[in-house]
Amino acid sequence: MKNPMLEAVSLVLEKLLLISNFKLFSSGTPGENKAMTTYSVNSFLRGDVLEVPRTNFTHYGIYLGDNRVAHMMPDILLALTDDKGLTQKVVSNKRLVLGVIVKVASIRVDTVEDFAYGADILVNHLDKSLKKKALLNEEVAQRAEKLLGTTSYSLLWNNCEHFVTYCRFGTAISPQSDKVRRVTRRWARFVRM
Image 1 (cartoon, one colour):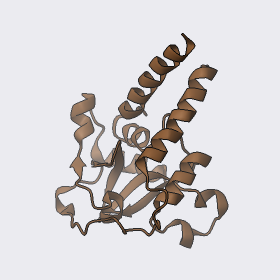
Image 2 (cartoon, rainbow, N blue to C red):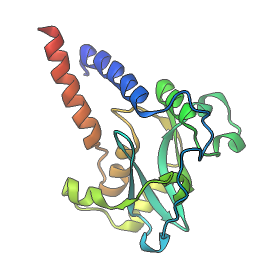
Image 3 (spheres, one colour):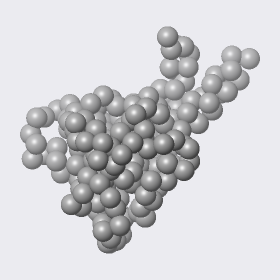
Image 4 (spheres, one colour):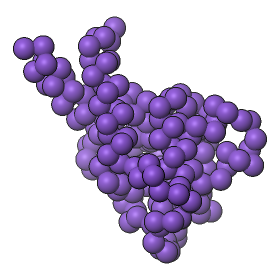
């Protein structure tokens, strides 16, 4: 059972992290801040974990081959419409932030370029940092493909890192979230003093 105080502090911290990570007052046009970067997809193998650094966190996806990446993206439109034409467009920052707030996301497939959004891509870095044995790449890709569709979302409990670690290692974990929860627990203990 989760501690109610920890849940409340986590919720506040989650919202503060969102505000610090996104330009809420930009026009939200996809690609407006994206550098024109090309990626050599020939070096990626089906089932590889792709990582792209963001301001205060890292975004993760599973390479499916043919310039396609499966990744979890919060998106408010999923709560508002079933129109695939609208929901398949690149998710703007505004849609993403509102998706986090309402806790709805999709595990979707985008091109490598749309997934990376102009950032450098690291490949299979989690294998080293987690010191876990990865499943076979084909099994990783198949797990990702089976999970495609709408899902619940939580920045701390069910995010893109949980998705890829489940696909790659068989266990849904998020070292990024673990760090945030440790800080939150320390802060909650400090507040109770």
